[in-house]
Length: 113
Image (cartoon, rainbow, N blue to C red; front, top):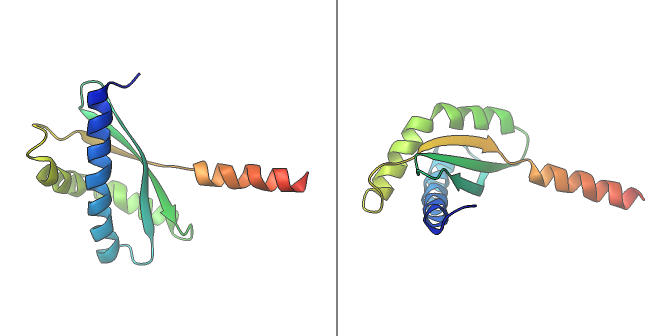
């Protein structure tokens, strides 16, 4: 069960990372829409699990690998944005959110019935 503090920090991280990815996508990821679907923060606020949705799917793996390589730079940008709200920026772990693919599969199965 997440505490109120964890939820507030998760929303703050999601908002600030959305701004960062908006700028990053213009510079590095042309024509790729990066959406942060979920952020989960550990109880001690030291680790943040970020789930990303990438659209379109054509270069999804390449873009995700590049994001993982740039994690330290993204964390630095996030720490600049969070400097007045948090003492320490959580370590970031990125994951691909496949829920949209899952929904499409279920939708297709239901239509075939």
